[in-house]
Length: 77
Image 1: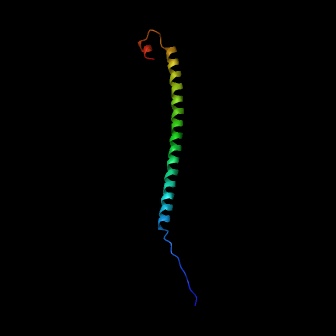
Image 2: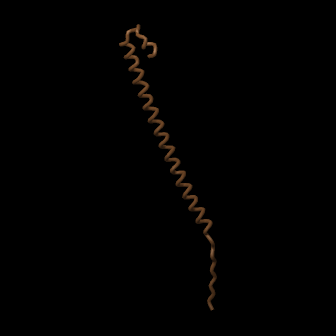
Image 3: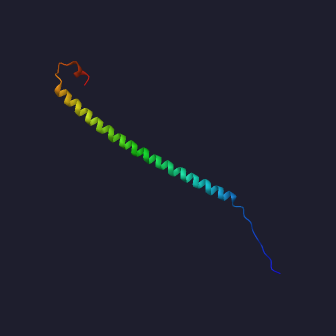
């Protein structure tokens, strides 16, 4: 006579934990991507603001050269 022994292990909890871990990793990856995009956008906005500041101050200086010193609008520039 030949005997057989079998063992059954419930791995439902392990599978659920693995699925949750994968979902959390995906969310973390997405958050890191969004952070990188935000950093890039902030850098671009800073550079754009810097360029606008330089160009506007240059135009103000050119305007001051053309406006006679007696003009009332000179006070606001």
